[in-house]
Amino acid sequence: MRFEDRSDAGRRLAAHLSERSDLPSDELVVLGLPRGGVVVAYEVAAALGAPLDVILVRKLGVPFQPELAMGAIGEGGAHVVDEAVAREVHVSASDLAAVENRERDELARRVRRFRGDREPLSLVGHTALIVDDGIATGSTARAACQVARARGAARVIVATPLASPGAVARLGRDADEVIALERPECLRAIGEFYDDFSQTNDAEVMEILDRGSRAR
Image 1 (cartoon, rainbow, N blue to C red):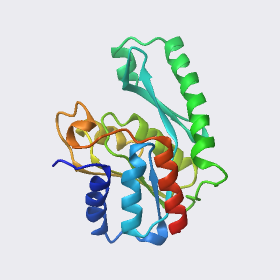
Image 2: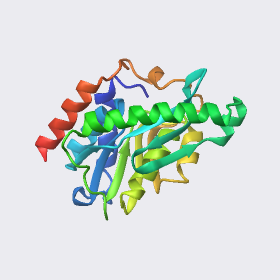
Image 3: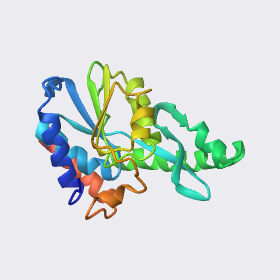
Image 4: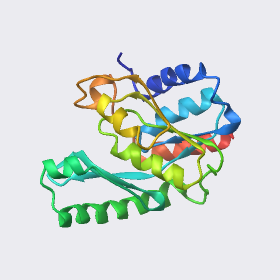
């Protein structure tokens, strides 16, 4: 399955989720992972009639190969390290600490930028539906699950247009359920499954969140 763009992927994911009777809108909060995941999440929230918010985490990329995640951090002190990746690429503790310090600065910037004067939606007693545009390793999504749990979510579901089988397995440690329309065995890059995978910028994320807020 190929997707035209993130909006198309969101609509297809939403159509799949709409068939579920166990996702009532009054118990659900849809949480998009910036940046691209927010575009997908908007379509899901609109179709399900559920509130939309952002969940802020940062991937910890290997210093000499930033696209390869060796862990992630998130709001509320969530911290995930993929020990297997860190060992395989021989990343030292000091290298990991340096990456984490840099990403914490960026995480703080994003909290200020994307949240503005809006408080995070309450997750207490709700089902947190965490949405991304694709999941290769699962480190960022795992951190998001931990953030949602810390904020009181009664149930945590990860939903995405595509995810690697390995990521789905790893996410099983932190999510109650993982939903992926496609689970390609060979997932080198998420963008390979999209006709248009152009970068989503901060302004677009903020506009989508404002749109979702107005809809509520």
